[in-house]
Length: 373
Image (cartoon, rainbow, N blue to C red):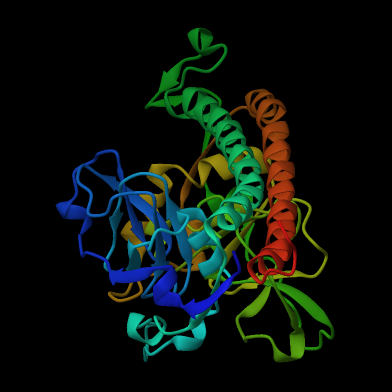
Protein backbone atom coordinates (compact mmCIF):
# COMPACT_ATOMS: atom_id res chain seq x y z
CA UNK A 1 0.00 0.00 0.00
CA UNK A 2 1.18 3.50 -0.83
CA UNK A 3 1.21 6.59 1.33
CA UNK A 4 -1.91 8.71 0.76
CA UNK A 5 -2.08 12.45 0.34
CA UNK A 6 -5.03 13.58 2.41
CA UNK A 7 -5.97 16.29 4.92
CA UNK A 8 -5.21 16.46 8.63
CA UNK A 9 -8.83 15.72 9.45
CA UNK A 10 -8.39 12.34 7.70
CA UNK A 11 -5.62 11.55 10.19
CA UNK A 12 -7.36 12.90 13.29
CA UNK A 13 -10.45 14.96 14.07
CA UNK A 14 -9.77 17.44 16.86
CA UNK A 15 -12.29 18.70 19.38
CA UNK A 16 -12.05 21.51 21.94
CA UNK A 17 -11.42 20.33 25.49
CA UNK A 18 -13.54 20.78 28.60
CA UNK A 19 -13.20 23.50 31.21
CA UNK A 20 -12.52 22.53 34.81
CA UNK A 21 -11.03 24.47 37.70
CA UNK A 22 -8.79 23.16 40.47
CA UNK A 23 -11.66 23.69 42.93
CA UNK A 24 -13.91 21.42 40.87
CA UNK A 25 -11.44 18.54 40.90
CA UNK A 26 -11.26 15.56 43.21
CA UNK A 27 -7.96 13.70 43.28
CA UNK A 28 -8.20 10.53 41.20
CA UNK A 29 -6.38 8.44 38.58
CA UNK A 30 -7.18 10.41 35.43
CA UNK A 31 -4.75 13.08 34.18
CA UNK A 32 -6.05 16.56 33.46
CA UNK A 33 -4.06 17.64 30.41
CA UNK A 34 -3.73 21.35 29.70
CA UNK A 35 -1.75 23.05 26.95
CA UNK A 36 1.38 22.70 29.10
CA UNK A 37 0.84 18.99 29.82
CA UNK A 38 -0.49 17.06 32.81
CA UNK A 39 -1.35 19.60 35.50
CA UNK A 40 -3.31 17.44 37.97
CA UNK A 41 -5.30 14.22 38.38
CA UNK A 42 -9.10 13.96 38.68
CA UNK A 43 -11.55 11.17 39.56
CA UNK A 44 -13.46 11.65 36.28
CA UNK A 45 -12.44 11.58 32.62
CA UNK A 46 -13.89 13.06 29.44
CA UNK A 47 -11.91 11.21 26.78
CA UNK A 48 -11.11 7.53 26.31
CA UNK A 49 -7.44 6.75 25.77
CA UNK A 50 -5.15 6.34 24.09
CA UNK A 51 -5.41 9.87 22.85
CA UNK A 52 -3.53 12.92 21.65
CA UNK A 53 -3.85 16.48 22.94
CA UNK A 54 -2.46 19.70 21.46
CA UNK A 55 -2.26 23.14 23.04
CA UNK A 56 -5.08 25.45 21.95
CA UNK A 57 -4.37 28.39 24.27
CA UNK A 58 -1.25 29.49 26.09
CA UNK A 59 1.38 26.93 25.10
CA UNK A 60 0.06 26.82 21.58
CA UNK A 61 0.75 23.71 19.50
CA UNK A 62 2.37 21.64 22.26
CA UNK A 63 1.60 17.94 21.73
CA UNK A 64 0.83 15.45 24.52
CA UNK A 65 -0.07 11.76 24.61
CA UNK A 66 -2.16 9.76 27.04
CA UNK A 67 -2.17 5.96 27.12
CA UNK A 68 -5.27 5.80 29.29
CA UNK A 69 -8.46 7.77 29.81
CA UNK A 70 -7.99 11.48 30.48
CA UNK A 71 -9.57 14.92 30.85
CA UNK A 72 -8.51 17.28 28.03
CA UNK A 73 -8.61 20.81 29.41
CA UNK A 74 -10.38 23.69 27.70
CA UNK A 75 -6.98 25.10 26.72
CA UNK A 76 -6.45 22.12 24.39
CA UNK A 77 -7.77 20.29 21.35
CA UNK A 78 -8.10 16.51 21.72
CA UNK A 79 -8.36 13.55 19.35
CA UNK A 80 -12.09 12.90 19.29
CA UNK A 81 -11.64 10.57 16.29
CA UNK A 82 -8.31 8.99 15.32
CA UNK A 83 -9.83 7.68 12.08
CA UNK A 84 -8.39 4.22 12.73
CA UNK A 85 -4.81 5.49 12.74
CA UNK A 86 -2.13 4.44 15.21
CA UNK A 87 -2.50 6.85 18.18
CA UNK A 88 1.23 7.16 18.75
CA UNK A 89 1.86 7.75 15.06
CA UNK A 90 -0.70 10.59 15.18
CA UNK A 91 1.08 12.00 18.24
CA UNK A 92 4.44 12.00 16.46
CA UNK A 93 2.95 13.32 13.23
CA UNK A 94 1.36 16.30 14.98
CA UNK A 95 4.75 17.04 16.54
CA UNK A 96 6.13 17.84 13.08
CA UNK A 97 3.60 20.64 12.45
CA UNK A 98 4.36 24.25 13.36
CA UNK A 99 0.98 25.16 14.82
CA UNK A 100 2.24 28.53 16.07
CA UNK A 101 1.89 29.96 12.58
CA UNK A 102 -1.88 29.56 12.92
CA UNK A 103 -2.07 31.74 16.04
CA UNK A 104 -5.22 33.89 15.95
CA UNK A 105 -4.96 35.28 19.47
CA UNK A 106 -4.17 38.85 20.40
CA UNK A 107 -2.63 38.95 23.88
CA UNK A 108 -2.95 35.18 24.42
CA UNK A 109 -1.85 32.67 21.74
CA UNK A 110 -4.88 30.80 20.40
CA UNK A 111 -5.34 27.98 17.88
CA UNK A 112 -8.59 27.51 15.91
CA UNK A 113 -9.14 23.87 14.89
CA UNK A 114 -11.03 24.97 11.78
CA UNK A 115 -7.82 26.53 10.48
CA UNK A 116 -5.82 23.30 10.67
CA UNK A 117 -8.22 20.47 9.77
CA UNK A 118 -7.68 21.01 6.05
CA UNK A 119 -3.89 21.02 6.25
CA UNK A 120 -2.30 18.57 3.78
CA UNK A 121 -1.25 15.28 5.39
CA UNK A 122 0.81 12.39 4.03
CA UNK A 123 -0.63 9.26 5.65
CA UNK A 124 1.16 5.90 5.44
CA UNK A 125 -0.60 2.51 5.62
CA UNK A 126 -1.30 1.04 9.09
CA UNK A 127 1.68 -1.34 9.16
CA UNK A 128 4.08 1.52 8.36
CA UNK A 129 2.44 3.67 11.02
CA UNK A 130 3.02 0.89 13.55
CA UNK A 131 6.71 0.55 12.67
CA UNK A 132 7.32 4.30 12.77
CA UNK A 133 5.58 4.58 16.14
CA UNK A 134 7.64 1.67 17.49
CA UNK A 135 10.95 3.22 16.39
CA UNK A 136 10.17 6.62 17.90
CA UNK A 137 8.66 5.11 21.05
CA UNK A 138 12.00 3.42 21.77
CA UNK A 139 13.54 6.86 22.25
CA UNK A 140 10.64 8.04 24.39
CA UNK A 141 10.77 4.92 26.55
CA UNK A 142 14.45 5.56 27.29
CA UNK A 143 13.68 9.21 28.05
CA UNK A 144 10.86 8.21 30.39
CA UNK A 145 13.05 5.66 32.16
CA UNK A 146 15.69 8.34 32.75
CA UNK A 147 13.02 10.75 33.95
CA UNK A 148 11.82 8.25 36.54
CA UNK A 149 15.37 7.70 37.73
CA UNK A 150 15.78 11.47 38.11
CA UNK A 151 12.62 11.65 40.18
CA UNK A 152 13.93 8.92 42.50
CA UNK A 153 17.31 10.65 42.90
CA UNK A 154 15.73 14.02 43.62
CA UNK A 155 13.20 12.49 45.99
CA UNK A 156 15.96 10.78 47.98
CA UNK A 157 17.70 14.12 48.59
CA UNK A 158 14.40 15.81 49.39
CA UNK A 159 13.37 13.13 51.90
CA UNK A 160 16.68 13.31 53.76
CA UNK A 161 16.45 17.11 53.89
CA UNK A 162 12.97 16.89 55.38
CA UNK A 163 14.03 14.22 57.88
CA UNK A 164 17.05 16.15 59.16
CA UNK A 165 16.15 19.81 58.77
CA UNK A 166 12.34 19.97 58.88
CA UNK A 167 11.35 17.09 61.19
CA UNK A 168 14.65 17.58 63.08
CA UNK A 169 15.44 13.86 63.15
CA UNK A 170 19.11 14.46 62.43
CA UNK A 171 22.11 12.43 63.65
CA UNK A 172 22.96 13.36 67.23
CA UNK A 173 19.58 14.94 67.92
CA UNK A 174 19.27 13.00 71.19
CA UNK A 175 22.27 14.95 72.51
CA UNK A 176 21.13 18.36 71.16
CA UNK A 177 19.00 20.80 73.13
CA UNK A 178 16.06 22.44 71.37
CA UNK A 179 15.75 26.12 72.30
CA UNK A 180 12.61 27.94 71.14
CA UNK A 181 12.10 25.28 68.46
CA UNK A 182 15.66 25.59 67.12
CA UNK A 183 18.43 23.04 67.78
CA UNK A 184 21.30 24.49 69.77
CA UNK A 185 24.05 25.72 67.48
CA UNK A 186 21.74 26.26 64.52
CA UNK A 187 21.51 29.88 63.35
CA UNK A 188 18.38 31.61 62.01
CA UNK A 189 19.46 33.62 58.98
CA UNK A 190 17.96 35.47 56.06
CA UNK A 191 18.64 34.11 52.58
CA UNK A 192 20.64 37.25 51.88
CA UNK A 193 23.04 36.24 54.68
CA UNK A 194 23.97 32.95 53.03
CA UNK A 195 23.56 33.68 49.32
CA UNK A 196 23.82 36.49 46.79
CA UNK A 197 20.75 37.39 44.76
CA UNK A 198 21.34 38.54 41.16
CA UNK A 199 25.07 38.96 41.67
CA UNK A 200 26.08 39.36 38.03
CA UNK A 201 24.54 40.73 34.83
CA UNK A 202 25.72 40.94 31.25
CA UNK A 203 27.20 44.33 30.42
CA UNK A 204 25.79 46.36 27.54
CA UNK A 205 29.13 46.11 25.76
CA UNK A 206 28.96 42.31 25.46
CA UNK A 207 29.36 41.02 21.91
CA UNK A 208 28.59 37.53 20.65
CA UNK A 209 26.13 34.68 21.04
CA UNK A 210 24.31 33.69 24.21
CA UNK A 211 22.31 30.66 25.25
CA UNK A 212 19.14 32.23 26.63
CA UNK A 213 16.68 30.80 29.16
CA UNK A 214 13.28 32.46 29.51
CA UNK A 215 10.67 31.78 32.17
CA UNK A 216 8.44 29.72 29.87
CA UNK A 217 11.21 27.18 29.33
CA UNK A 218 11.56 26.30 33.04
CA UNK A 219 9.32 23.86 34.87
CA UNK A 220 9.77 22.61 38.46
CA UNK A 221 13.34 21.39 38.75
CA UNK A 222 14.51 21.67 35.17
CA UNK A 223 15.34 23.85 32.18
CA UNK A 224 13.56 22.36 29.18
CA UNK A 225 15.30 24.34 26.45
CA UNK A 226 17.68 27.19 25.71
CA UNK A 227 17.64 29.52 22.72
CA UNK A 228 20.79 30.53 20.85
CA UNK A 229 20.70 34.26 20.14
CA UNK A 230 23.07 37.01 19.13
CA UNK A 231 23.23 39.29 22.15
CA UNK A 232 22.65 42.38 20.00
CA UNK A 233 19.22 41.07 19.00
CA UNK A 234 18.33 39.30 22.27
CA UNK A 235 15.41 40.51 24.44
CA UNK A 236 16.23 43.26 26.93
CA UNK A 237 15.46 40.75 29.69
CA UNK A 238 18.35 38.50 28.63
CA UNK A 239 20.78 39.85 31.23
CA UNK A 240 21.25 37.54 34.22
CA UNK A 241 24.56 35.65 34.27
CA UNK A 242 24.50 32.20 35.90
CA UNK A 243 27.35 29.98 37.08
CA UNK A 244 27.75 26.40 38.22
CA UNK A 245 25.88 25.87 41.50
CA UNK A 246 23.45 28.77 41.09
CA UNK A 247 19.71 28.33 41.58
CA UNK A 248 17.22 30.21 39.41
CA UNK A 249 13.72 31.03 40.61
CA UNK A 250 11.00 32.72 38.53
CA UNK A 251 9.82 35.92 40.19
CA UNK A 252 6.51 35.75 38.31
CA UNK A 253 3.75 33.46 39.59
CA UNK A 254 5.84 31.65 42.19
CA UNK A 255 3.02 29.14 42.70
CA UNK A 256 4.12 27.55 39.40
CA UNK A 257 7.48 26.63 40.97
CA UNK A 258 9.56 27.53 37.93
CA UNK A 259 12.99 26.90 39.42
CA UNK A 260 16.12 24.93 38.55
CA UNK A 261 19.65 24.34 39.74
CA UNK A 262 22.45 25.25 37.33
CA UNK A 263 25.11 22.55 36.87
CA UNK A 264 27.99 22.65 34.38
CA UNK A 265 26.42 25.43 32.26
CA UNK A 266 27.74 26.67 28.96
CA UNK A 267 29.99 29.72 29.53
CA UNK A 268 27.55 31.99 27.65
CA UNK A 269 24.38 30.88 29.45
CA UNK A 270 22.16 33.87 30.31
CA UNK A 271 18.72 33.85 31.93
CA UNK A 272 15.87 36.33 31.96
CA UNK A 273 15.72 39.14 34.49
CA UNK A 274 12.38 37.57 35.38
CA UNK A 275 14.45 35.09 37.42
CA UNK A 276 16.10 35.63 40.77
CA UNK A 277 19.55 34.03 40.58
CA UNK A 278 20.63 32.65 43.96
CA UNK A 279 24.39 32.16 44.34
CA UNK A 280 25.36 30.18 47.49
CA UNK A 281 28.00 31.73 49.76
CA UNK A 282 28.10 29.85 53.08
CA UNK A 283 25.87 26.88 52.28
CA UNK A 284 26.35 24.30 49.51
CA UNK A 285 24.05 24.24 46.50
CA UNK A 286 22.59 20.85 47.47
CA UNK A 287 21.34 22.26 50.79
CA UNK A 288 20.23 25.65 49.51
CA UNK A 289 18.34 24.07 46.61
CA UNK A 290 16.27 21.98 49.02
CA UNK A 291 15.77 24.89 51.43
CA UNK A 292 14.44 27.19 48.68
CA UNK A 293 12.06 24.69 47.11
CA UNK A 294 10.09 23.51 50.15
CA UNK A 295 6.34 24.11 50.41
CA UNK A 296 7.05 26.62 53.19
CA UNK A 297 9.43 28.62 51.01
CA UNK A 298 6.99 28.61 48.08
CA UNK A 299 4.24 29.72 50.47
CA UNK A 300 6.43 32.59 51.63
CA UNK A 301 6.90 33.76 48.02
CA UNK A 302 3.18 33.44 47.28
CA UNK A 303 2.33 35.56 50.35
CA UNK A 304 4.74 38.29 49.24
CA UNK A 305 3.75 38.34 45.55
CA UNK A 306 2.26 41.60 44.29
CA UNK A 307 -0.10 42.18 41.38
CA UNK A 308 -3.38 40.58 40.38
CA UNK A 309 -2.87 39.40 36.79
CA UNK A 310 0.82 38.51 37.16
CA UNK A 311 1.65 38.19 40.86
CA UNK A 312 5.39 38.56 41.29
CA UNK A 313 8.09 38.89 43.93
CA UNK A 314 11.30 40.90 43.76
CA UNK A 315 14.93 40.23 44.67
CA UNK A 316 14.47 41.83 48.07
CA UNK A 317 11.77 39.28 48.94
CA UNK A 318 14.25 36.48 48.34
CA UNK A 319 16.93 38.22 50.40
CA UNK A 320 14.55 38.58 53.36
CA UNK A 321 13.37 34.96 53.33
CA UNK A 322 14.18 33.01 56.50
CA UNK A 323 16.77 30.22 56.36
CA UNK A 324 17.88 28.02 59.23
CA UNK A 325 21.61 27.31 59.02
CA UNK A 326 22.50 24.05 60.82
CA UNK A 327 25.88 23.21 62.27
CA UNK A 328 28.59 22.87 59.64
CA UNK A 329 29.31 19.10 60.14
CA UNK A 330 25.63 18.27 59.60
CA UNK A 331 25.45 20.38 56.44
CA UNK A 332 28.60 18.70 55.13
CA UNK A 333 27.15 15.25 55.82
CA UNK A 334 24.01 16.16 53.92
CA UNK A 335 26.04 17.53 51.03
CA UNK A 336 28.13 14.33 50.88
CA UNK A 337 24.87 12.45 50.30
CA UNK A 338 22.92 14.92 48.15
CA UNK A 339 25.55 16.40 45.83
CA UNK A 340 26.24 13.10 43.99
CA UNK A 341 22.49 12.68 43.51
CA UNK A 342 22.27 16.11 41.89
CA UNK A 343 25.18 15.20 39.62
CA UNK A 344 23.61 11.89 38.60
CA UNK A 345 20.28 13.55 37.85
CA UNK A 346 22.09 16.17 35.78
CA UNK A 347 23.84 13.50 33.71
CA UNK A 348 20.54 11.75 33.07
CA UNK A 349 19.05 15.08 32.01
CA UNK A 350 21.88 15.57 29.51
CA UNK A 351 21.28 12.04 28.19
CA UNK A 352 17.64 12.89 27.65
CA UNK A 353 18.56 16.02 25.74
CA UNK A 354 20.68 13.91 23.38
CA UNK A 355 17.92 11.31 23.00
CA UNK A 356 15.37 14.01 22.18
CA UNK A 357 17.73 15.58 19.65
CA UNK A 358 18.27 12.21 17.94
CA UNK A 359 14.53 11.48 17.93
CA UNK A 360 13.65 14.92 16.58
CA UNK A 361 16.23 14.56 13.81
CA UNK A 362 14.74 11.23 12.79
CA UNK A 363 11.11 12.29 13.15
CA UNK A 364 10.57 14.41 10.00
CA UNK A 365 12.49 11.93 7.84
CA UNK A 366 10.25 9.09 8.98
CA UNK A 367 7.09 11.13 8.59
CA UNK A 368 7.96 12.17 5.03
CA UNK A 369 8.78 8.64 3.92
CA UNK A 370 12.40 9.61 3.28
CA UNK A 371 13.49 6.70 5.48
CA UNK A 372 11.79 3.44 4.57
CA UNK A 373 10.70 1.21 7.46
